[in-house]
Structures are given as C-alpha cells and as structure tokens.
Image 1 (cartoon, rainbow, N blue to C red):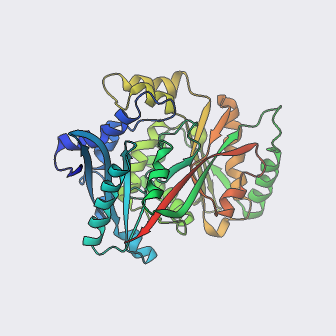
Image 2: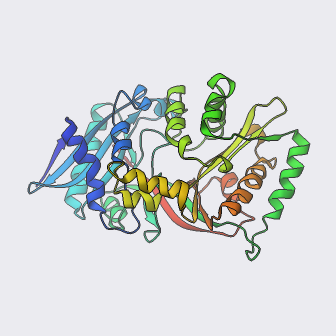
Image 3: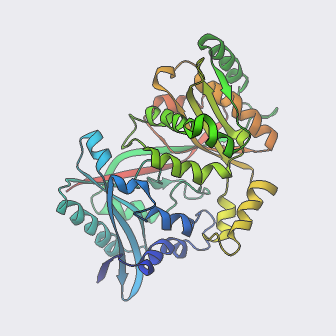
Length: 383
C-alpha cells in the first residue's frame, strides 16, 4: 500500500528536493537540481510565482520507504489567460511501480477537483520558465540545467493510467558552423545585413551583467524581458512574467552569462525588439557538484564558467517581437551568437524545448547542421 504525505516541514521539503538526486544518482544523463535553487522555488516568500499560483507538495511512501514525489499546482494567471480550469502536476519522480504513480497522480487529481479544476496537465512547473514536459525520446542524451530528465518507464506508466498527449516539445543538437561543416551559416549573415538596413536596426552590447542591470536606471532589463512576454504570449500555457519574476531570473542567471553570448537587437529608438541568449553548459559541473553549492559545488561551477568550459552552449531564450517576426530579425541574433560561439570554442548547441507545431521557431534552424535528439510531452486527462 502506498502512503501519501503532504510536505509540511523544512525536513520534508529537503526530502522532496533530494529524492530526485537519490533516484538518479550515478545516471550519466541526468543533471541534478541545485538544492539552494529548489529551496527558493518552493519558498512562498521568495518565488514571485506564488503571487498568482497555489501549490502543495506530496511524498509517496511504500513499506516505509520514500518512493515518489509530486507537486500539485494551479497557475491562476495562466488559467485566466487561456480560459482553462487546469491543475498541473509537476516535479514528479517515482520508482518503477504503477501503484506509486497512480497514488501520486490520484492525489493531484483530487486536489484539483477540490479547487474546482476539470483537467490535469503536466509535467509543468509554476510558469513556462520552469522545467516542463516529460522526456519521451532521447533518454541517452545529456540533460541540461533547465530541462527535465526521466527514466524511460515514466511515460509508459503514466499512459497506462489513461493520460494522453496534450503537446510535445522538441530539442535540437545544433553544430556550431566550422569550415568543415555543411551549414550555410553565411546566409544568416546576409539576411542579417539586409534586415538591419531595411528596418534601421542595430545591436546593443554590454560588458558585464552589472551594466545591463543598471541600464536605463534599472528599467532596461524589464524591456528585454517584455520582448519575451510578447513573443511567447501565444505559446501553450504561457503566463506573462511580472516585474518581480523578471528580476529574480535576471539576478539568478545574468552573473553566469558570458556577455558575448547575449544578443539584443534594438530599433532606431534604442528599444529592444529581439533577444537571444546562450550559456556554456553547466551540466557536467552540476553533476560533479551533486546538486549542492556547498561545500565544493561552487568550485565546479566556477571552473566550468571561467577556466574549462564544456564544448556545449545551451540556448536559453530566443524571442522576437511579433511585429518583427518573419522579417529576418532572427538572423541578426544568429549572426551575433555564431561568431562568438566559434571564438569561445563551442562545438555544438543545445536548443531550449520548442513546441513541435511552432513553425516559426522550427524554421529558424533551417540553415544549420542540426538534428532533433530529444522529445518531451505534456500529458492531460479530464477530471
């Protein structure tokens, strides 16, 4: 028999977070979450998403042993935006036992019904900026710090419980162009030059993260993320980031960025209209740190960032204002990032998950040597 317990103490929260690490310990493809980051994610005072989300966390025990975890989440802003009554299941992990999975999902289903929801979807986080989608293909590929890794039995067991496909995301392995590569990267350069002249655009550069945070009396970073809000507005389940969320993301990720991998396009009035950002992969460093910053996890991160970067660049965000889409603006972003990636020495790039039916997003890789190497799924079930 499976016993489900609600997380209601700091001790339970640590068990919830570290269960993922213990379940995947030694797995060469899984990348552990940072304990410190996860503690902030589930802290109602520190995570701005709790301004419009409600959530509870649950642990599953069988024969006295911890065997699973799940978060029940309602994003009220997303539900209002999309006219839904969805409860989300997220941060789900479990041993290979159908009884355990059923107990976890039954708990979220009932939790959602009690709050008036009529559909369950997931795995999803609080917002679109959190890891989402259950891996259904690419189990032999290294994960990233911003995506979910799971064992192949996960989707099989979930589908046995009547869950069906809601949407799929795909991820690509994109080779950084070299003289030997067969990618027509020069076309990006030509399109970028034409687009820049036709629409009177230019690139904005920053020396370090402190400079961008201080620009326009601290308001510039809000304008940059507003590009993402507008570019992603029509994507599945997206809920607009508020100012507090934006600043949380900025302070979390900007210090780790190589500014050469941040591309911002501005119009003639010096207003951002597109942005793309990449970061040297921290996957191997996070594995060595074993999900903890202290006592020595910080050293593995610093080594990966400043001394011995991995050959992989993770592409975190790419966004163009709707009115500038299909006008070659994406090419400006690639024309900026590709030479920087070549100079730094990256061999290939890992794209962020992209909806399989997002033709605009899928088309931007047409002139690069790439392949889809991962696919992940959001499941759904009527309540």
